[in-house]
Structure formats: structure tokens, C-alpha cells
Amino acid sequence: MRLLHLHSSFNPGGKELRAAKLMAAFGAQVNHTVVSGVPGALGAAEVVDPALNVSYPADFPALTGRPSLARYRRIATAMAGHDLVLTYNWGAMDAVLAHRLFARRLALPPLVHHEDGFNQDEAQRLKPVRNWLRRLALPTAAALVVPSRVLEGIALDIWHQPRGRVVRIANGIPLADFAKAPPPDALPGLVKGPGERWLGTMAGLRAVKNLPRLVRAFAAMPESWRLVIVGEGPERAAIAAEAARLGLAERVHLPGFAPDPARVMGLFDLFALSSDSEQFPISVVEAMAAGLAVVSPAVGDVAAMVAPDNAPWIVQPGDEATLSAALAGAAADDGRRAAVGAANRLRAEADYAEDAMIAAYRRTYAAALGRSAFP
Image (cartoon, rainbow, N blue to C red; front, side, top):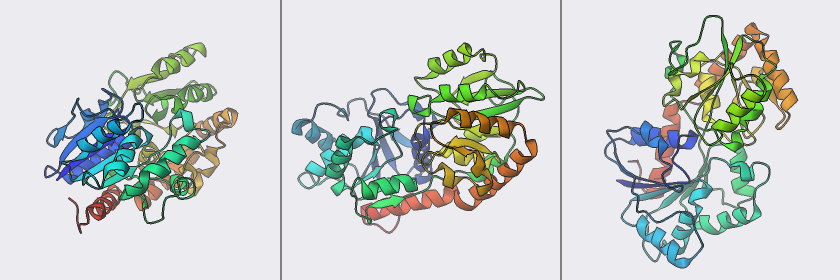
């Protein structure tokens, strides 16, 4: 079985880590070819099981560029020879369009497209041209996979996709791994000291995550609290600069990317997001599985993901003062944080098991191939 993965980027993030988990679940009987729409953005390769058959070709046709039938034909021709094509997010939409244009003429393999959310340029409003291009490109896709109810509604109502093409699969995680308490030195170069409380987040350091906002909201928390932002990305300098501007440099830590979130999440005493846009963030599920309360804007499905007990700490998007007040309130009440965290853990156990997610992806890919099972 030969799978071709065409990613908008393959730097570490939620969809990339999920893809790596699925690749591991499918085992050595599947060969994977992974392409990044951003040349060289292959940082998530370090979490891919080295025992798998995975290649990262440097000569695959560019996934973005000036529209032309010749370029689309080159992309389509490169799809041939695979059994299933998997495309991810807007950055791979040219490949979806190439499939639409040449699927019949070149007898291309089936294609499943995945949409996980939007970058900063569509955080507030979807671009009409992109909506139109999705409608144009997606008709030959065997399925359009989305993780959230919000994206499911967008796919049906704005992108005009038929009900039978849209498949919603909630992100799942290995719940048992997050029940273990990590050692205080689980993060390289950073040790949790006695009496410290950590407000934590895990995210790609991108503009859409608006992590300088989290630094500002954190400023009102007690001196015993530290902010630990786990991840890498282009916004690292901006986050550090905001911490320095507010005199918080000694209390704000950026330890880098953690390939195994289960070894880190339990160090946090409270989890937070400050994003302008999300859909179904895996990090929130991981925080819930670790028994943490969550403070976040009500972006994507976050308000529906957490337990009802957590609802008062899900705030209006863009309201920095309310986010800050929610963080301060959560920090001040250890007992309530623990109770909310326990409720979140129960919700995660009921709804977000990794095995259920993997089984749903197997069914979707098998259906695209016209098979009863996958791989």
C-alpha cells in the first residue's frame, strides 16, 4: 500500500502529530511519501516512527505557485503510482484541484482531503476566493475529513459539500499515557521547583495562536505562577519580547518543541489557549486527559469539548481582560481547579480515545479505496 501525503506544512503541529500517529498505527505494511507545501518544513519527521517506510522527496512538484494547467498536470502526474492521496489544509488545495482536473484522464488514485483549521489570514473571516476554489476543487475527493462541528458546518454550508462527502472525526489521544505524573525535569533545561505553579500551553508558535496575548493575560497571575509555552515556530521572538516588555522574562519560559506531550502535560497546573482561531485542538484534549482545567477563548469546538464544569473559564474570543480574569480566578482556587480537571478527565475518557479515532480513519480510507478494511 502506497500513501502520498501532501501537507500544507509538515512542521510540528496538531495535524502533523496526528498524521504521524496514524502512520504508526497502519504499520510497516504501508509505504508513505510525505511532501510539505513549504519547502524544508519537515520538522514533524522527528516524531515519525523510524521503523516505518517513509520518504520525503525533494523533487516533488511545488504545491503552490502561479495557476497553470501545465503545473497542475505535473502535480497530478506525480500522484500516479500511489494507492491513495491524502491532502491537508489550504496549502495543498492546488493538489486537490490538480486531481479534479486530471483524475479521469490520468487514472489517478482516490484522494481524501483533510481540513483542520485556518491561519491568521482567515482567523476573523474566510476568504471568498478560497471558498470558491474549494467548491471547484473538491468534487473528485472521496471524502473531506474535518475534526470539529464548526468546520463540518463550514464544509456543508459555505463550501457546499454534499453530506456524504463530509466526515467528522474527533481527534483522539492515548488516554492512559496522560494519567502518569511526569518527573519535574521532563522538559530539557527547565525544572519545576517546589511550590511553583505552572500555567502551560502547547502550540506551534504561529501568529494565529496569539501567544503574546497569553503573556499579557498571565501578568495578573500570582508571583508563584510561571507561564510555560511548549512549542516552536516563527513567533518565538515576539513572545519573548512581550514577556521582556512586561518585566516577565524570568517567569515566562519557552523550552521548545516536546515530541511526547504525555511526558510534559502533567507538569502543568492549569492549561490555557489564547488563539484567534482553532477548530478541535488536540492540546485541549491532552490537557483534559491529564486532569487539567482549561482557560480558553470560545474558538472552534473548545466550548463543547470541555466538561460543563469548565464552561465558566471559556471566554469570549478577543476579550483579553476576561481571559486575564479567568486565569486569575482559576489560579486562586486550587479545589475548583482540581474538580474541573477531574471532570475534564472523565469527558476525555468518554469521548476522545485514540483507538476510536484510528478506527474512524481506517473506515474512511477503506471506503475511499472501495475496500472493506484498511490497510
